[in-house]
Image 1 (cartoon, rainbow, N blue to C red):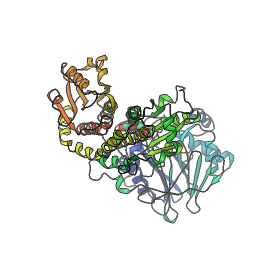
Image 2: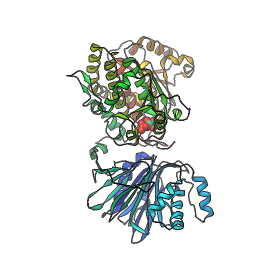
Image 3: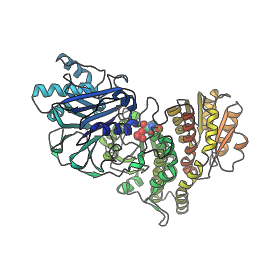
Length: 614
Ligand code: AGP
């Protein structure tokens, strides 16, 4: 996934572009570049590395011009290097283009354009687009917007593009299909184009979300026009942004990830706000109100998601089956979309996605939708692509999650899943009055309990220091905490680059126990609950093989304390809500180990915040 920023207006474009790229860097940081038009000339500056490397690269250049485009890349086709960095130029150098997505049929088009004399400089799929548009404009003698429309009719793939031309210095052209693009409308005719709204919140709250198949033509003097790929114009639908600037700052924390870990008492509270009503003893989820009966009658719920969201979906399976007695299947979206799955019209497909832009999850939705299923979404980014293609859904309201490693979004997703399962269980009568009310109170108490878990950070940091040089780690959990073990392992892997595996605790005996030795830290969620005694036995099996045990226990536990090398205590809670508490120490452990290892916690190598390509 990549970050796109573009600007046309009365101000110098460069400071707006570079500030915007810094805010979007979590979307990809392999290379960065800008193109500006000033005094009839198109100036291109780009290089491998982060946005800060681009700033060093342009150091001293005047960087003038009130129209420009900027890009920060997550490499798909072509390694991260200077020539593959965006923007890409037409042969003449008159047109510059930036792109987020993949052009799947780029190879044959590239060969044809080479035969027609176009000079390619990079290994990217993107560069085909700018040459194709240039070629069409020359041969069809059409304006730039029409050339873009004709070109996009002949490419296959996903794109969010913005381009400008030295010959039309007041014009920005943009288009999208499957990759996001937001138009910011400022005062006195200035316009912004961005991958998501974070870079423009300090300039304007008025936005237009470009839809799939639409082309935006922004002229400094004539303003914004939107047409679709069939050349039909439409009136832009201007919405007000709900984002606030302070949500995008680190707020005094060393990293966004640490800030977001500590935001969880608030973000979990926000995901319940207006939905959990203790006084009335009810759960209200307005976004799925029209589908309550469908849920009550559902024979099956299919969850489609990726990564951490998939782990939340696994907690959701245990919640729905335990509280609402609905069979649930949890599918990796990337597998679901290609294995010709059986999808029935009375199926409910639950799509979980923090960014709301993950390509595999989007494709899984399109497949399920095409076969008549009802699609319900759980997204964090308001107005995101997935949020807009589902029939109904509930936002997690966790606030912007900038750290690439998902933390507060995970607990917010689990909270919304718990609310859904409780609401449906109550309506189905599978969750009795007293148990429902008790669970309602327990869920309401979670934010306060998360506050308490966070007070153990110093102890967690002490443990992190002991295991920061581990080369492998195991995470074990049972029942509702098996997905927490998977999530804990993913956190460690993706930010500290230590190999880690999560397993159902009982599964250890079927192979992984061979890995146990005195070098192997084993993180075990061993809280009081249905499978406590079984987990204690698993701990003893690890101990017998000299494994190092770091156990997450219910406060006051003495049994595990006598067996483990380290314990981290968390408040007591019903089994089904323990994931909201047990995941916090595992987030903190991974964070502190990664920091001690000198890793880039907010922007881990090879990763991006949302994978909008296959
Ligand atoms: C989690 O820490 C990772 N950043 C990654 O696994 C992420 O959860 C996955 O790419 C899904 O993203 P989404 O929730 O935005 O769809």
